[in-house]
Length: 418
Image (cartoon, rainbow, N blue to C red; front, side, top):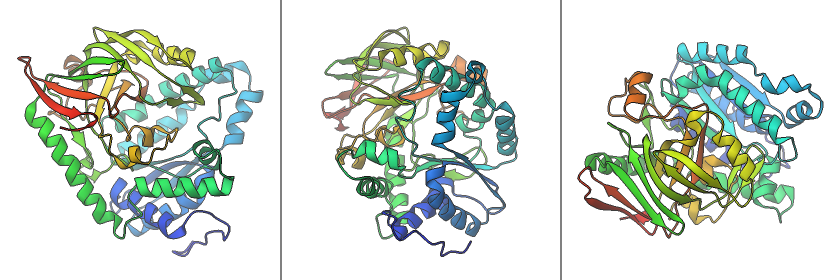
């Protein structure tokens, strides 16, 4: 393969911007270092993008690149023909190998953009069982990600079925072109110098995180239609946003795009009720109008106008699934929110609104980044096999920072930074 890998003439995706996206994924997302190996996962539909990533990764000095692909037809074949016991199995041997790679400082990139409704017609019990088996098997390797031990990053590519979900009134070709443009804009690669643009954007997010860290709030209080929620913050929590150094010393952007600043809530100190402001797309199901109530940090009541059974299965994943592992602030005026699009993809939708995440916390979001799992738990960090973000911010939501003495500081008003 050469630097001039051909793009099909009929391809509706701008090849110049696709190449810029690959460059940003490698230089900004991963900040891949000379001599590093790269493990990359992607849907088969993203092969043209993966090829461009390979060019830029090898230019950056990658030692080896190992791509792992998933395919919609193979996934559906399992649900159509596999024996029942298949849905309680996962390739632990593969994840053991991934864990070994990460322990040797291999970088990790995931290209997301699968068909969000692929499993919508499948048995929800089988979907839930397969997801749980996979989460349990993946956990040893995932620890390197959640602990931010290595440089890792997520980026995206417009899968045709995903494009049609976002733009149902367009032809497939037009939908792919429209989604590609939206991805490029949100990922800041439609700029003349996207790498420099990302440097300025990261500096802005760092300033927001520094302001929050300077206040050392004890809790955040969200109020608005259907919402009166107090999210206690973990002891010794730290706010983060934009690029940050992994434990291996490499500064990377875990999410391309990103508009959030985020930290770790206290798993036992969340009280009140909250209503989702956007639908949650999860494993082929759309969960709409989520409304939950917390007591002692745990969800004790949960409802949804659509997908409520799926929501209940999520909450039953394990003991930590009904508690929070992340709280994030995103201004309503973010570019993704301003686009007016529902992406049916958490990587994008979480960057359109402030959000909370059920499940596992990020152990890096503490002032002491070398805490043991036991210390993380003692300071309020949650543990779970899941981490699922859903949106609670809008132009009608206010956020106050609450100090330990009960005094309050405006943080957001009508969804914008105060």
